[in-house]
Amino acid sequence: MLKVDGLTVAVGGKIILRDINFEINAGETHILFGPNGSGKSTLLGTLMGFERFEIVDGHIYFQGEEITHLPVHERAQRGIGLMFQRPPTIKGLPMHHMIKICARGRKVSEDLTKKLKFDKFMDRDVNYGFSGGEMKRSEILQLLAQDPDLILLDEPESGVDIENIALIGDSINMLLERNVSPEDVKPMYRQRRERKKAGLIITHTGHILNYVHADFGHVIFEGRMSCHGNPRELFDCIQRMGYGECVRCAI
Amino acid sequence: MTKRNFKPQDFTTEAPKHAYLKDLGSLDDLDRKRLLQIGVDINTQDRIGTFLQIDHSVVHSGSQQKGLEVMGTAKALEKYDWLQNYLWRAVPRDLDEYTKYVAAHVQQGYFIRVMPGVKATYPLQACLYLDKDGLAQCIHNIVIVEEGAELNIINGCATSHKVHTGMHLGISEFYVKKNAKLTFTMIHNWAEEMQVRPRSATVVEEGGVFLSNFVCMHQVDMLQMFPVITLNGNGAVARSHSVLVAPPNTHMDTGTRVFLRAPQAKAEIISRAVTTGGEVISRGHLIGTEAQVKAHLECHGLLLSPRGLIHAVPELEAHVAGAEMSHEAAVGKIAPEEIEYLMARGLDEETATSTIVRGFLNVRIEGLPQELQQEIDKAIEASQESFM
Image (cartoon, rainbow over all chains, first blue to last red; front, side, top):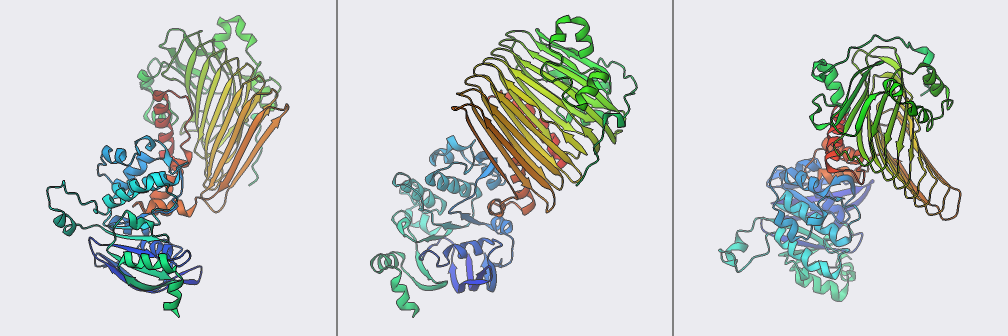
């Protein structure tokens, strides 16, 4: 679904990412670990097409089409969605209008807003005075309305209190079609096999792994993807050794 | 940009007489469209009263609500001797050269009065229309909302397609009595070379509420006004919201001044200004002379073109300890993160920008009945359509 090939990215003339290569297939969720400042957000911003990230070299392919130089809205329209870590406030634009924008004519069920405990916020301006958890719920609701095939999640657990984290995790699973249920008519194995949604989650704490199961893990360190593997194993290693272990690899 | 300072004497006071229209449907299409853009609907079903003045002639006035009077000021002065006591009481006759000129040359304006306890939810529409090119239109309006009464006015001021230049001089005096409520929404749409100098003042008594909306989104050579609201009684409330868009070659110098002269008086001034090349001076002046008053002022400006001016002038004056007053002002361009955010949800750059600008200009007044808010939204949208 997504293929990144030899991607090198600069911000303000300074190289931040070097020669990044990876691939995400339909139905897979990948998790990208890395310390603050390692280039994780730069990678998501580049995949979304934000202008300040300058592609110096390499290519991005989505559903087999090269999108390296496509503008942001065309990527969104083709099925890429981003959950912002710190989304801006849009004054005077009520949430219900924003959800309509995201849904592009599709109907969004009121049950979704209720499930996300967001029904009372629909007349509020987008992100205006929202707490950390409310902001994440707003992002997830927008993405559920947008219904992208590839979801990029930028530190989804940051700023979320204990009470909210399970709800956020559960909603992300819904977004990524990972909430396989024994009550579904289809067997759980088939639910997993037929899953189409793909995800790329970036995290520096890794706590999101307690709520969302990822299939593959990667570590990014000083702008390079230094390590790939089982996400749990990578997380255990980071917990025990810190990102200092990455230095040993980098040398 | 230096603008020539026009005087009333630069314009004529002579205008043809316009016949009284029983039915506004007889207006021509261009005029009808123009009126609709300022919130005046010729289909008067959803209005409890209508007043329309073209140049110096009152061409339509009437009320469908018991306890509500709508007529030309000249006629009202003939009818009521006591009205003299309200004339030039809130706005001093010798305030400036424009008020003096109107005092000497006044030609009509409206008189609107709601009797005590009458609550009118649906709006009354009043329109001051200029059809003669080069005319100085001198108007004196008086609105009296008696004790415990409620009234909503949508007031449109505009020029017809025949007008290129002219001067609009409008004196407006609003009296909001004890526990009464007046919502006044004013929408302007002028010819490009127009000079506009309204002079208005509102006196609010104990427990009274005055909500004011002002919208001007089109080119006008010079619009200058600084309406004054005096909160004279305990717990009187004023909220003033303005939405301004200044295209190139436009100069708008507007604002609101509120005197908080009684305990528990509350005032809020909110202004949103956008320039696409013109100049906006956005003023706000709050004067608290009693303890336990609360007032807040907010001026926000958005520059949508590399050239243009937004000059926010917020002023707070507290004359006693215990007057609680605050202000915030911010001017700048649209944050690129906001545009990117909407683009990431699938909007192209142009649509994202206009969505943000619409949101920026979307100021909601607290305490408006829903029907009125819908009417105001419709009028603002019609006005926006021609600018976006």
